[in-house]
Amino acid sequence: MKWVTWENIGVDRIACSWLIRRFIDQQAKFSFVPEGQMPPAKAGEPFDIPGVRLSHHKGHCSFHTFLDEYNLSDPILRRIARIVDEADTVQEACVETASAGLDLICRGIRRTCPGDHAAVERGALIYDALYAELASEAEARKSSKLDAPMNARERKASIND
Image 1 (cartoon, rainbow, N blue to C red):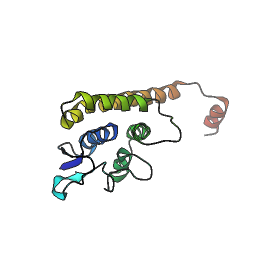
Image 2: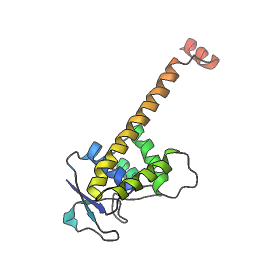
Image 3: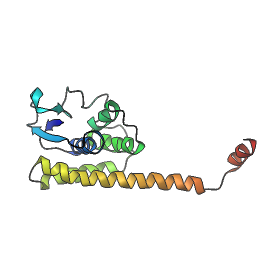
Image 4: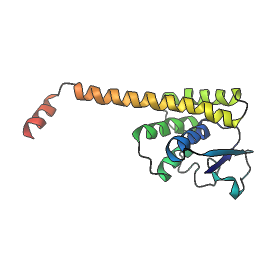
């Protein structure tokens, strides 16, 4: 399938491109139009362009919209959505410490790539690494909870079961 977004991709558009290729459409082809221009219908499914279905909605970034529209409930993807949200949209409070660094890295990718296609490819490595690290952290938390000794309330609950 063909997908289209604005040129000079950043943190949200790189994230969406990665998400599309990894979880929605492995054969995705991307094209880019000048910022502010609405792509022609035949150009492909538009994303991260104001006014289109797959864009910012209800104060959230486009990545978040993709998760909702494609019913992707993976908790790691949901965490990445929070990180991208904080990096790409104005937030009242920042709780994801990785947001600023991710935005900085994505801006650097854009500046060092010869074009948006290369930025999509290089950015995919960043998001693959982010996904792997967050999955590892989640697994470690899960394991530590399983290995942790039970507190008094948990012991009493297990005896009553």
